[in-house]
Length: 225
Image (cartoon, rainbow, N blue to C red):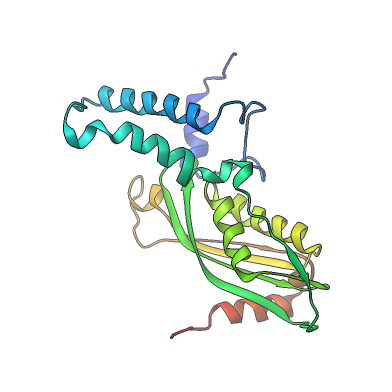
C-alpha cells in the first residue's frame, strides 16, 4: 500500500490541532484482529520504541512496560474504538411529562489527542429536551466516556456525543459543551499550562439563543455537597 509521505503537511495539521472528519478515521479492516492479537502486536511495537530510545528493558522496572502499555491502549484509553463496548442506552417513556431541559454537567472527560497521543482532560456538560422519551442519567456519562476513549480531536468528540444522544432519544434537541486541557499544548510545543479549549454543539431547540442561554447558565451553577 502506497502512503503519501507529506510529512511537512501532516506535521502542520497536527501542530494546529485540526481534525479532518466528524467520524473517527477507521480502516475497513479495523476489527479483523482480536483484542488479544492487537495487544501482542502493540507490545512488540512499544518494546521497539523503548529500545530505540536506548532504554534497558532487562531492568525490572521497564520489563513489563510494553505489555502494560499494549493492554492499556486496547482495553482502556482506546477502548472506545471497540464497537462491542458501545453502551446500550435504553430509553423510557417520559410518564411524568417533564418538559424542560435536563442537564448533566461536569462529566469527567479523559481522552487522547490523535495528533500526539497525549491526554485531553476536562469536563463535558450535556443537555436534552425530551420529546416523549428519557434516558438514564448514567448512560449520558457512559456515552461521553465511550467516545472519549479513542484518539480524538475535541470538536469531533463534541459532535459525536450530540449525534449519539440524538439517535438514542429520537430528537434533535441535544446540546454539549466541553472544556478541556490538552497536554499536547500544556506540556509540549507552546507549553501553555493555563489555556483550555472550549467546544460546543447545539441541536434543535438549543440553536435558539434563549434556550442556549438557559443551558449555559445552568452549567455555571456551583454545585456543592
